[in-house]
Image (tube, rainbow, N blue to C red; front, side, top):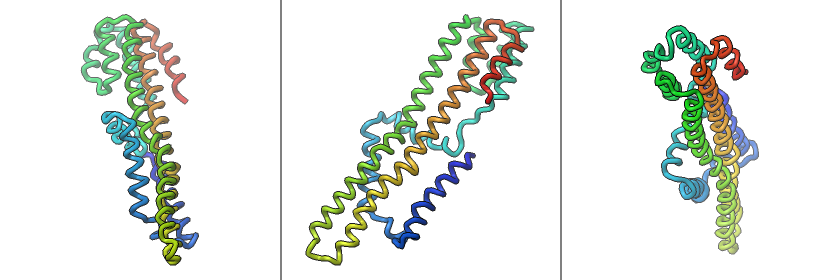
Length: 246
């Protein structure tokens, strides 16, 4: 569980709600149904328009990564790779067949199976890099859904404010409605700018960081499995892979 994401979201709420109370507006002043529809529904509509359904669904699925990213244990992976290299050195690549069947990580399992099949090192690298690139690109497209929403939301906030002011201008003959009407118009701007800068863009950036970490992890797996295929010394493999540890 990523405690920083939870703290960040809570502080974002405190900043907006607390700021509204401190300024004397009150929390009730932040709610406006029309502004919500224009900004939030409009932002989602724009995101749907630009993305494929599969990409949009994937983006909604991986949002959970900001709280609980897929587990990555670099030390454990290095130990496994070194162990595999030792087995391959003593028993040959066929000695890894049982381990390939038991491996739970799909990416590592594919690499092990390629090893067992006697695939050439360069071919193993090429196959795994294609898998890695495809996975990374798909995940990044999902993260960019939130980036795009962070771009659209402020503009829709301005549209909501303008539409609200248009409604105010139609009631100039009733001065008692001008103040509340103008305040409601600017709620849309708050929705747009706050949602973009306190949610959509931070979520996109955090997802991209998570994807980057996963990519580096899989690159390490590729290097380790390729080194095993090339018959490198287990100690040299470990030394090489330690370069991935910060």
